[in-house]
Amino acid sequence: MIVKKIGESMITPLGFTVEENFAAVMAGRSELRRYESLWNLPFPCFVSLIPDEKLEAESARELSAEVLVSLQTKFEKIAMLSAVKAVKQSGIDPASERVVFILSSTKGNVGLLEDENSDLERVTPAHTARKVANFFGNPNMPITVSNACISGLCAQIEAYRCLKSGQYDTAVVVGADVLSPFIVAGFQSLKALSDEQCRPFSANRRGLNLGEAAAAVVYTLADESADGWRMLAGAVRNDANHISGPSRTGEGSYRALMSVLAESGLSADDLACLNVHGTSTMYNDEMESIAITRAGLAAVPVNAMKGYFGHTLGAAGVLETLLSMRAVEAGEVPATRGFDELGVSMPVLVSSEAVDTQKKAFVKLLSGFGGCNAAAAFVKV
Amino acid sequence: METMVTHRVKLTPECLEVDGQRVAKAVAGESFLTKLYRMYNMEYPKFFKMDVLCKVGFVASEVLLASEGVERFVPRADRAVILFNRNSSLNADRTFQKTIADPADFYPSPSVFVYTLPNIVTGEIAIRNKYHGESSFILLPEKSQEAMEQAIERAFLDSETTSVLTGWVEAMSETEYEAELDLKLET
Image 1 (tube, rainbow over the protein chains, first blue to last red):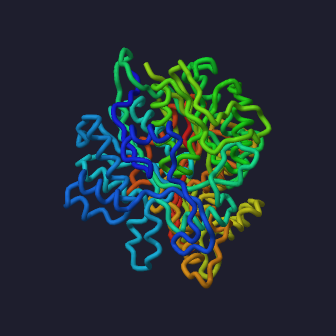
Image 2 (cartoon, rainbow over the protein chains, first blue to last red):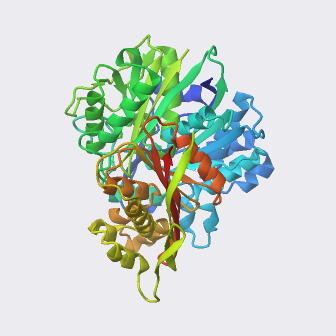
Image 3 (cartoon, each protein chain N blue to C red):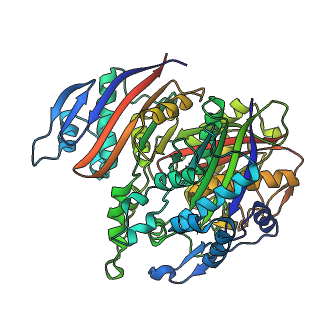
């Protein structure tokens, strides 16, 4: 049996469907912008926010009044909305005991801590995951993956294993994170933020931009003869080097890439692109260029999505996978928005223009705090 | 696939148990975690920088691995570190929130912020032991042996993974915590 995609959804500042988001990417659009004093924070930042009015209108259209009352935060709303849309598109019975819900989030409802009277029970993303699973009447305990920036890929790898192990037949994966003073001040304290457009892999890159998003994907077991998108392999590896800085040798990313290539049977020649993390921090992009080269993938076009959406944390792995699927279907590797002149030590193939491709497979790569790295391979049949 | 549990460690603010036997008991007024750090000669000064979730996971993993009786700190990629809890990094989150709550007293610190991710403890254990294998932190709405066992069974689908350091690690404060770790081997 193979693992096949049968549903998807996406909620970002660029649109509330995958189609809208893909069209925006191909048109080079972004809602990343500079705020001089967002939420009264004492520094400027450059972020991408989901407009509240648009989210309220869409929620009112898609969700019943009863459900809306139970969703008290923006995080809960985008997580639920993306799950509802993806489940609807897939046509599955979400109440089946053969279906599992998997959430990917780094900070969930952490914004609730601003109010000292908040219910602390609600802060953990595991609470939101249960809320979503309960809404669908699903009887299984939901799984929440919280592995910093690689969570969205880890959640898909968990889904793949849930199906391959025979534990479940179908998995609904939801990746979501919203911004708050907590997250923006934290990344600022690490000196990781740029107050201008991020420039992945460029010599003049000065840090990352943060963004809000939710994206969901539904995978199911299907026969070997099935057409459509398949997940072929996934791996998580640790640098075993430092909790908040990547390995200088790209150790974990290199190992994750090698594992995924071996397990999927894909080689560099099969890949339309390598959709990387590309946060636009000095260390991350440099590390990725080394890992890609060590893994023998220097001839594969590389692209990064952070210049369109910012770093969407727990959503990134799902969002960037779904958009890469659309790109491969369209026969184009999207431009890396914000890229100008290569500024990493290894000559990886990053481009500020879209590049044509006829190939049908790609690899997604992410890395995160805690020294974790994840890679996964996908192919259109 | 068959798996075998080699050793188990249970750590609470009251006592430390290895394979069901109590090996250390807390005394009022002392830091039990620091006492265990010294008792087991862990010699890892980074311990003192860690938040309580990391300290609890670190101490429990050290005791567990000391009981394994094989040479330590040899780089390997066949061991995964997969931990679970319910409340993520809530204690560190509350600590960090206090540093940004008052605009007149705004002092967000990177050394506090970095611990506001639950998977930092899995990273600390991987770094300490030179484990290049899978590391992952999974949140469950409640402690469930069944859900944890299912996740470990899935982890063994990775063809490089032959053992998993795993278990529940929750730390709500310096005086409210719990770790129950074990080492599962493929047989």
